[in-house]
Length: 125
Image (tube, rainbow, N blue to C red; front, top):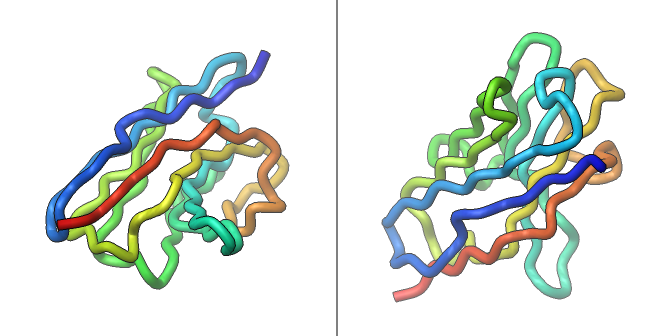
């Protein structure tokens, strides 16, 4: 059974860093475009970052460019989101996602078939 499981969320103060991890089981992550999304109650799920399976190209949402970095370790079937200079507006539930239908990744949630259960990130002083 294909499954994604996030970890690493928590409570941090503004300006601090946090690293999220996502473990994939049941499929070979290297053939999948992968992404991180986040969602605040009452708002649509927002694309944060993604990596394409074809050439490893990365894309970031405007609100996180220069602060967040997405990466992957295909051998370990893991993906990561390094988040630096966190701000209160980054508070959300963060989800990892994967799909193999597209050579170039996207930040549209409808393009992804597999999802993790989410991990809460709270940035507050």
